[in-house]
Length: 66
Image (cartoon, rainbow, N blue to C red; front, top):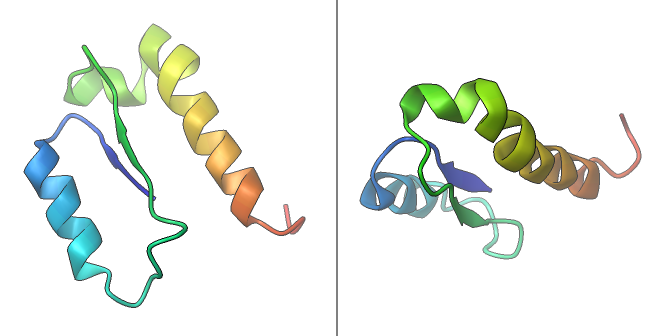
């Protein structure tokens, strides 16, 4: 899973392509609208938009090991 976190869409898609050892199924692409580089990691948009997506992805792929 790679998110477009305040960076260009092309950058994160290219990063996913470089991770050739990871099967396509667990990879995700999420565009956080109206979020700049700082807003991705702090504030209201982090709490309301980004963190829930990231948390759910981690829980889905942790196999109960958290």
